[in-house]
Length: 136
View 1: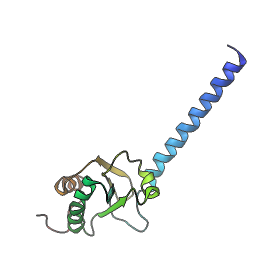
View 2: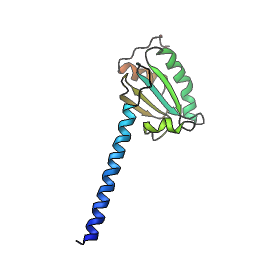
View 3: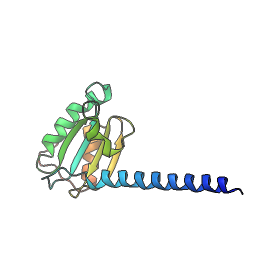
View 4: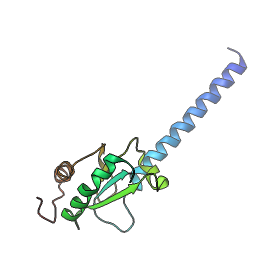
């Protein structure tokens, strides 16, 4: 094997190693920065857009869930078109995406696509989060 071939292989391996390190740091930042400042509550985050049909269908579902879990779980929405930098750490592939975080900001669950209030409430209950308001 020639010296040039060895050098090309070494450079290629180094580039792959740097890329793997950067991807790992991005995934770590998504988990470590998941909890909003000042909040000690678990969080249900919906990433979507005001122009997406499935995302618009989620609005009343999230509003109802926010009322039911007031003081128990923070329910938040990020419009990925209006706030791409805010959505970037979550490494979403499609919208809408719902992510449930515990009080420490650790991701517990991720769902892609429309999700009904009932299904989200069932998932929150599965993690031990009991609604503060009675469900319908």
